[in-house]
Length: 190
Image (cartoon, rainbow, N blue to C red):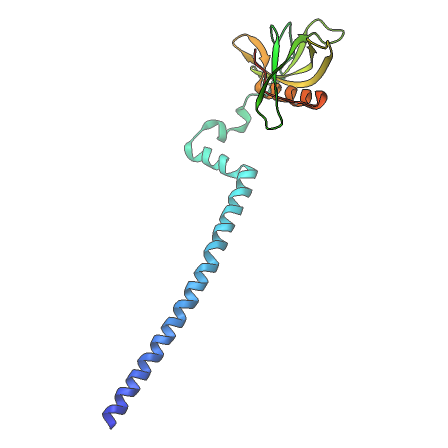
């Protein structure tokens, strides 16, 4: 009888230890599930703040040994870029394809020609850098109706040695023409 009681006590003791171990494992797993996401969120937040304030790029420049990051006074001073005048930005007709309600092209085309701004013989490009800028005043004339449309702040880019309307500029022109003409238009084609 004593042997049987000893076996039961040993079994109860082992069972209680296993239950406590399982209980601790649950708490450890729960703590990990709570702490790991908090650490990740905190790391991302710290990285975003450091990136916004420029700490990371300046530190990385020092680690890599770039002299321009160690000596901020040696950087060149930005020289303002002057405006440029251009005789023409697009030669020939500009053709916009009309789209149906679903956005598919139709057989109807709208033709436009570039016109000089009022009281000016040339277009003025406000340069942002050597290759990019905006046209102050840009005009298009509808060939069919002779109606003139004025646009301002149209994006332009310099390709080789000539200024042209940039893709963002054509998107702006198309969007404004759609609003004024009350129809859907595709992107222009030469």
